[in-house]
Image (cartoon, rainbow, N blue to C red):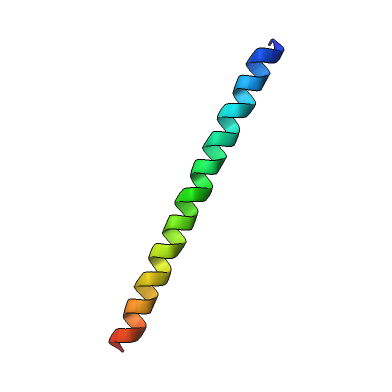
Length: 42
């Protein structure tokens, strides 16, 4: 593997990781809002 290949692979990994973090954050917000709605209903 050339250094360019390694760099490209690392770039892909980091963007994939960022996307996962964003998804997790969105999911947490969603769950928080669902919990908030449930508490208000009670």
